[in-house]
Image (cartoon, rainbow, N blue to C red; front, top):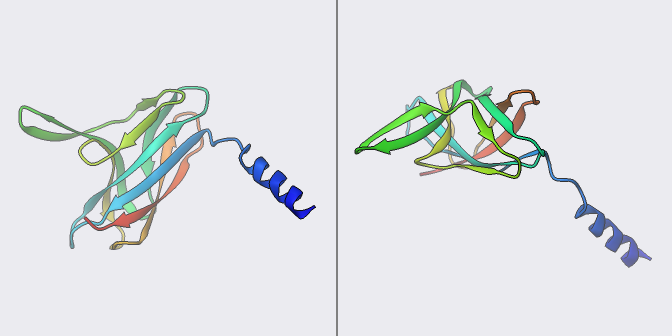
Length: 138
């Protein structure tokens, strides 16, 4: 009887619906000492059935938080605001070094390898999504 019950429970956990908007692999680069900014990276997957619009971000740990995209053209690297960012249904957007990232500025305290940083992704016409990212040393 226990084996049967355990099998049913395991099958049902595989049937749980996926979140409408899912974040995986979130991490923040450990900044050098006395630095006033760092960046966060993640994979953002839209399972909602509709296009969603990422409008910004905020964090209790930082005074300013923005979504940026790093680009290089003619040997010059620049960062530009990347919001609003449209994410189509079933699309995964990768935030990675040298590309899209969550720019975290004006830290309220220092962070080190292994710490966790919490921030929220803000969407147009949707509730904010809380993200917990692990700090990684460079």
